[in-house]
Image 1 (cartoon, helix red, strand yellow):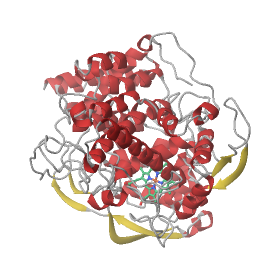
Image 2 (cartoon, helix red, strand yellow):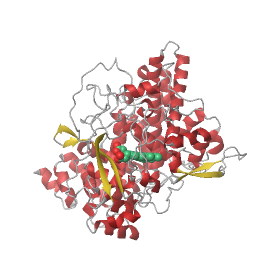
Image 3 (cartoon, rainbow, N blue to C red):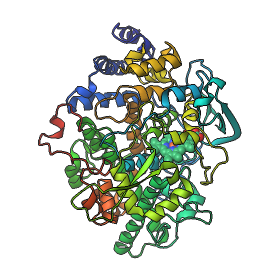
Image 4 (spheres, rainbow, N blue to C red):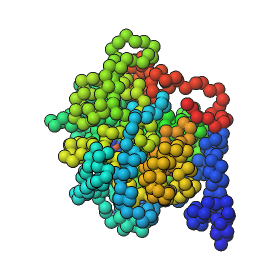
Length: 636
Ligand code: HEM
């Protein structure tokens, strides 16, 4: 009764009252705090400390109300001391259930499946894609994010998530009146495989064919076969070609942990981290000459996966969400409020807030076994980051002092994909492609920016082989979210305790967008597809993604670290070796990894502070104001 009267306070948005009604008294009060701040549109305008408090409360509420487990936990207990390494299929990470987070387990959910009764083809996905997604003219993301940053997130996606497909095909046919504007009038693709779950929150579920842990499976594979394919079985090392790029099999397909929908930028990052792995092996062998191949491999995998996770957390993400509040927030996730110096000196001694998530005594899953979620997949549909062409630079010239290398050619992206892309990458070499991608801005996550070449795309199967039926990815992505029961935009926001929109003007102030939304959805804001809402939403200054996507991210980014035994209980010298742990602790950024493997490259070509910003842009200005005391400010 007490809860009811609290939740019915008239200032709570009517559509959120039923969510509040399920909350405990304390959580209700916490919800009031963030709801008030949301109503004022204030959190990102608060000084850094205020913003952090808001995000801390929000994350707590999402951990309580937005984690749903799908499927059972049928795993077994095992000896955690015996299995103190990352296994090939992601088993044996959760301390008391060996199956959690392993290959072939269910995607979880952050909210119940969509309750709206709209049909799968309402409105027709081709109509939505033609009217709202198709790229008219390439819109870039300014100096904030480059093509390495875009490849990086694909590199991460291929570490974490992919849906198992059914053998049944679906065909999407464009309605006759739309045929002219469609790259493909009809196309076929495989349905997502539906599996019954036995759980009440969702009777059917979908299976993840990549291990969702942050375990580097993008280079190590997702199971025993994948792992065997990439290893040399000598000194712990992985296979790499003489030119520093990936080796290829007799069909020309790269030999790596994941080869689906590969392109030059993606396979270049795989090769870079194979080099990193092999360099860790060399270092370990020097300090610990008695270690055999298996032990060297295991330690080097732990170290390399942690380096990847760290770069993502304190380098990539702070460029994606370029504000002081997020810079502080991401560093707190890794090092804690007391910061790197204190953690390096005294270790993890003071709990998650003060000493960070990494190194926690026990993993924390908030009572819900770890998995990545359907909603997480949806908010990471970011193909608009991809440009139309890769702008190649000449790095052989005599330019000096961070000058922008001259452009020599613009290669259509389709020619950088698959086997053809691999051949071109090998002709150009790693350094030229790296410098070129570093100098090129990636696409902005906004409407009318979906790459045209992806609307007639030859996709790959799990073995990296070309499929015979090209697809229109823009259309397919709208279909996929609906097929998997992901809530549409407004329901999605409500479930995330965000204020829903009641008219298009609350989503955007762009008149042209409002007109197009009206043409597709009429006045029915409930019908708005999630993808369209995420791309249309007014962005927070400094954020490359929408606020709605960010709140899923806020929950999941910390979960990937805190739920993982190898970032918590076992993030220690016993599990990683002393020298291995030092390697992780000394590596802060992608630039550090590039400097290790390409001597002088960033010194010559990179002017900016992060390897994920456009390389000829200004470095970050020194700010003498302590980070936690700063007012709200974007860092661009
Ligand atoms: C040349 C580069 C890329 C190609 C060719 C490519 C292609 C594809 C294809 C064919 C799918 C499967 C679609 C389906 O069956 O539903 C897919 C899924 C996906 N891609 Fe990409 N992609 C590329 C880059 C990226 C980038 C940069 C991102 C950024 C985050 C990204 C994120 C995703 C996500 C989240 C999915 C959904 C995975 C799932 O359903 O489990 N991709 N991509």
